[in-house]
Length: 267
Image (tube, rainbow, N blue to C red; front, side):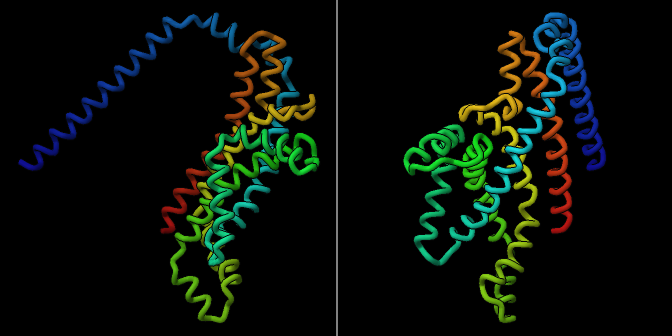
């Protein structure tokens, strides 16, 4: 009786799956028949506009997006490491500062943080952010990324078994050396997937840098596409930008899945 009941459940599950497949296929066929493909192509995929965007969409837009992302991620990762360690410090003012900074940057929209860093902070401190768009973008995006990555690093450190620190201290290592050579390497092995996810999010957040002003050679992908769309009065440039973002981010998301599988196997 148990075998018969199990076979019946399996058969019903297969029938439900095939019903879902059939409904999905019908919906796709209806969409394919009803969509005005000529109008869609005219609005979103004009070959002559695509040709006009090449090769600058790659050599300017995509290149600058990658540069902004790399600089902001590198700066944010270093700052995040200090913030994570400060938040775990036994010195209360360090914990207060790290907690306040993290909660402030995580609580504000990234666009507001970038505007304050690009315009408000230099005026208040009487300084000039070096590097122009790159310097302001690195600082603004880096501060936002640091707030999120700091919590990721802190969680990774806390995920390392406490006995690792105790064993290192029993061998005569100072707390700082134990953290540097024993705890952090293990923590980073755990947090590589979420850090890679943060990198993917940062790539898309570079689209916010339009607020700090750009030159023709410093435009990132979204700004580059928006300017082309204004000139052509057509949405094709945004389609091209979307494709370029996917070309950049899809390999990274695939890498995240591979790293997560490897991490899960190692546990």
